[in-house]
Image (cartoon, rainbow, N blue to C red; front, top):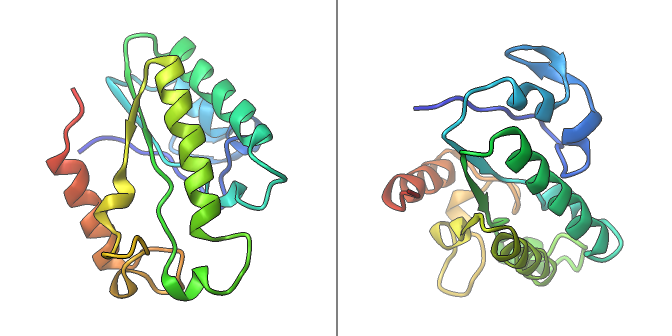
Length: 163
């Protein structure tokens, strides 16, 4: 249950000012979220930022995002979800979309969660194989989850409640 906001290609920067279609009309995601009553806010952003130069911009934008969420919803529990790993095949391509880079970004998210007193939830472990890669049968392109992968993620959220 719950309400959700999403847009393909969202980043920790675009949620502030890129107008997108939301249930409340065309506006930035954070403006729509500001108008919603929230007890918990689950955030999953970061994979589209992997091509950014280093982690400093990602860290700064993610900090601004958390600060905005805390200001707009001071009584809500904020849950920052880890970035999911990529498949072994994707990782072997040598592109910037790789698990080493994802690990670095997840480290930033963990540090920010601790700094701002929000929850960091390692949802990546729900879809990893024994070698730390995205399970081959739970994705369709090495990066994005298929239906089975989405179900595993949802099951993880249901079995790891945040209070």
